[in-house]
Amino acid sequence: MAMHPITRRLPLPDGTSLLGDPKALQALARAEGAVLLRGAVSAQALAAAHKVVGEAAESVGWRSAGRGRPGVKEDPNDPAWVAWYRTVQAARAFHAIPHEPVLLAAMSAILGGEALVHPRHIARCVGPETARFTTPPHQDVWYIGGTSNIWTAWVPLVDCPDELGGLAVLPRSHLRGRIASEQAVGAGGQQVADLTATDWAWEPMRAGDALVFHGHTVHQGCDNRSDRLRLSVDLRYQRADEPVREDSLRTHFDILSWEEIYRTWPADDQLKYYWQSQALSVVA
Ligand SMILES: O=C(O)CCC(=O)C(=O)O
Image (cartoon, rainbow, N blue to C red; front, top):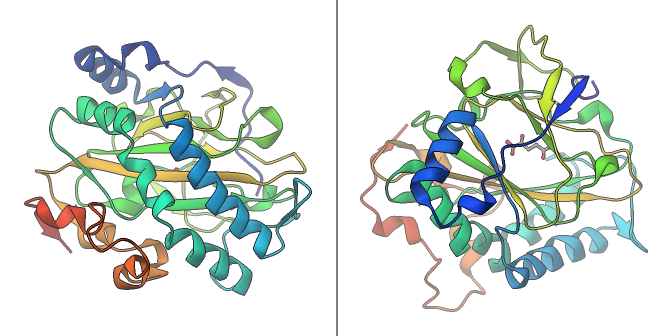
């Protein structure tokens, strides 16, 4: 099923100018349920992550001369997707993105305490002609659990003008708490049940901008109507002193073990098993 229709596009609350003012950023994020942070990822970290994710897409034949292969989508039964995802998940540049200082400081400000960066980050590659599989409206808390006080940062690795779609959020929907969901058609996973909303917040994003939103904020992918691949990452954060579900500490889809991922990293790399130095309450 294509994206839930958007009749009116509203601007995203912009927290960029509040990056030096943690209290004001927290107040805006908590009131709105979502904030846009322009340029949250440094050019160097962005370039390194884009290189890994993009070159992996080229090596499985999904991109050539800048054009994306139609129909490319998340599919654990597709050997090309598995090969792409293993390469991406093994890359240090991919795992470094959520630890970018601006992003981490913003998340700590919003959470109001020490942040735990979930080591389970997600990379997405959305090809042209995939509207049937566009991520339906949902709340992230349904997938993540542990605590409902979860914040996601959605970061495109390529510029996302109108035709690439990007991500739309339902303004202040986090104030409704957890809402009923049902099995989604097409894309799989969960979608919010009986959704009638027509006004969504959406803006074009540049590579390295971050759209940060609460685990109760309803959001959806927007159809990729371009001839290019949409490359993006989903990063999750919570307070280190709130319960964390055990699977948030594993890789997405268990695509690789941490031992496999770290095999080629420097022996003393500080990003290895960083969460094990935090006193976490891990729940099933
Ligand atoms: O990129 C997408 O299609 C969806 C991302 C998403 O839903 C998320 O970040 O939670």
